[in-house]
Amino acid sequence: MAVAMTMHWPGLTSDQYDAVMAKLGLDANPPAGAVLHAASETDHGIEVFDVWQTEQAFNGFLEQRLLPVVSELGITGEPSITIVPLHNLYAADPQMIDRIGAISLPAAVASWAS
Image (cartoon, rainbow, N blue to C red):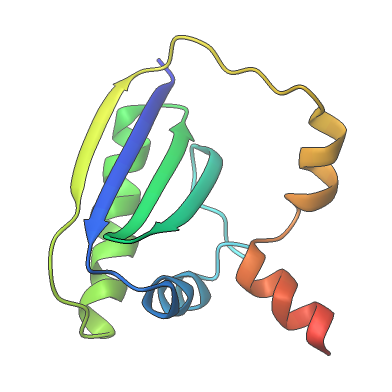
């Protein structure tokens, strides 16, 4: 069953988030079961919203890829994670998602700057 995952990471900066994303290399090696990823910066840290095909797929990514990279980068603190069954996924303009979602923002910014 598809799930929605929300992650609140107090104190995580956008630079730290970008370093994690670069190290994960999701554009070249997307995680199995990932459907959608969105992140925003707030006054308190980073907020993430993901859609995954299954909770097990997210947990595998968390344990085998995300947490090791966070540790390697020396990032402290722990995120608060909530996983719930996905009730609905609506995209008003799926072609726009296809156009802008082919690569993650940090990689897109790097390629636009070149």
